[in-house]
Length: 423
Image (cartoon, rainbow, N blue to C red; front, side, top):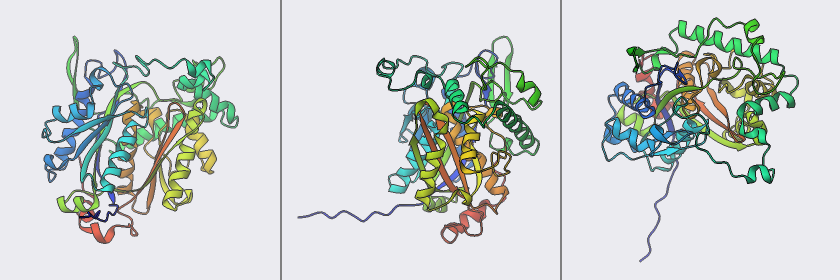
């Protein structure tokens, strides 16, 4: 007796919601110096459930949480431990992911693939990095063959050096341009805060510091809105004498967590969950490790090709600002002005911080908020460079656009959330 395989069809994946903790500075002066990494993730998971009460916790099919340094309080298969600590039913599994800076982005694309395939209906995906407790590379033991066989340039193991290499490769990207871009990032973030565009998706976190007691943190710690180009020009260049990369035109060392809720379009409609974005395509690409910052270029080209789109079709860009030179190299490649209003409208990691594996979902959450504000934009891009020479890119569609692909099938879900304050 022969068995027949049931026919499969790929399902549409939608971004339901995303939240994050305020980002803190790493180290003793950071707001989370005495806070565990897994507790930050728990805050995000619980907030997602609070904001989406129509979702039964038992309907969550998996929890994927990324961390770059998977040890201590951000180790032990943190997706599973965070799910248990957050009070999800024990029937909800979880796992951990590591793709360095693109950890949370990979958590999203991996679980989204499961939704499209039919293995999941609803998932939680995110990331955490406590760089104060676990500096990047802590405990790592790179194989000596990397250097002895010259598989990579020694500079590839230091992200700041790779940024200096990008300046070498693209001499038109001067330190002055990088500093100007960095100042603009600070200014745009300050304007977004003033317009209450950042706060709705932040999870308040109570944290304790020895001798100071408890404090409730409701805003990011790293921003320096008073930054000027003149001040940036005077900063030292720690990675190279007379170099171009400084603490002012690069993201800092930070602590923080993010989490997103994804679902199939059908499940979102069934559970009356908000539809904030539709996943269109995603891609990852490898580049020379010593110039890892160029990674978003081939990743974006691959994602655009998969979607049948052109760069001109992208109406909003959320580019992770690991370094200003990295963003500028992307913009120059695609012929986009560095002050283009489509690019990082709320500022970026240079101002707000970059807790490595968590940042991908921050980009998505900010893009979703901008989609709600601007229904004239149909497609948006979230992209980032990745250590050891990689790039990631995800293209999303705006459900508020008049030509939204799923308007007929998910109109009710979209309409129920239009203009809704998710805070």
